[in-house]
Amino acid sequence: MKIREIEAALEAVLFTMGQAVPLASLARSVEQDQEKTEKLLHEMMDRYEEEDRGIRLLELSGSFQLCTKKEYYENLIRVASEPKKQELSEAALETLSIIAYKQPVTKAEIQRIRGVASDHAVNRLVEFGLVCEVGRLDAPGRPILFATTEEFLRRFGVGSLEELPRLDDEKIRTFEREAAEEVEGQLTLGV
Image: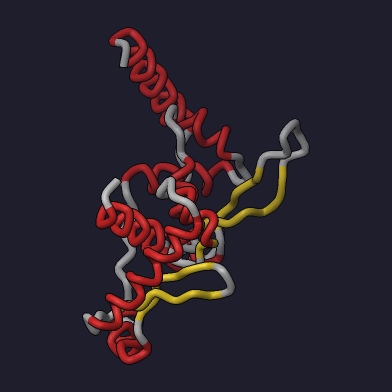
């Protein structure tokens, strides 16, 4: 790897991690020894200062971290304080409805119902504060149980879970049959 490529890789790792990364980890990431890696990091630090960039590279007890220069905190605050529009994907909405109606429920149960992995959707719902961990199932592996939160009730304008619309048994059987046919069709097609 050329010096510029190594520096670019170090920069990418530091940016992505968003926190202090030990020198040993950085050296491993670019397949260099620690002495050479530290020298490159110090050269990058100097270059950031010389070029008067908006970011700086800090050394913190044998670790390194990219951060914003304090002169630009006000700019960050203006953006960070703007309300964020949180949109849910179709997968997240499907996952949320399963959790709302089946709670408490494990990721494995959600996956069984949806027919696809739902880890990302569950994690996004936790980030949005719409679901949370409420315990662990007393079963092998002790999987985490998820349920909706008060924020879920507020966002969807319901006072309690009892106010959620109820599906009649015939509709549930129809949905289950359609889902089974869809999965069977995918298996037949080799999808």
